[in-house]
Image 1: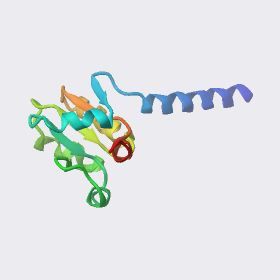
Image 2: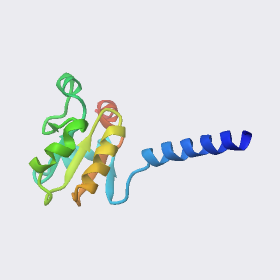
Image 3: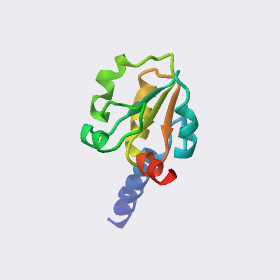
Image 4: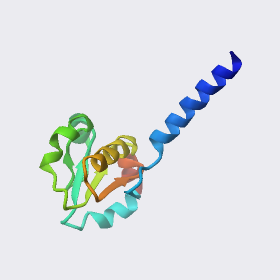
Length: 122
């Protein structure tokens, strides 16, 4: 019975680590690096937080597509242009980045630390 508990705990830990790790092919940038990225008009900037989070505070140039709607609304995005994704902490944007890669977006960038990091980098 003890071995079973250890195996279950180990599997849960591995699953959580897997969810937090950046996916292959997804570029990771800091909030400080984002400042330079915002100057590039060829990039698409997506905020995957809820509409209320976005309304309360967002970065000019980012469009709001909540994570739950991203798959359906991905047709509105160009697969030829890089997509830069942000959320509050970097977790939802990491999930969104993985989703975009699975939807055949080749150039995807996640903002590590999200809006929390952005607010503290000002």
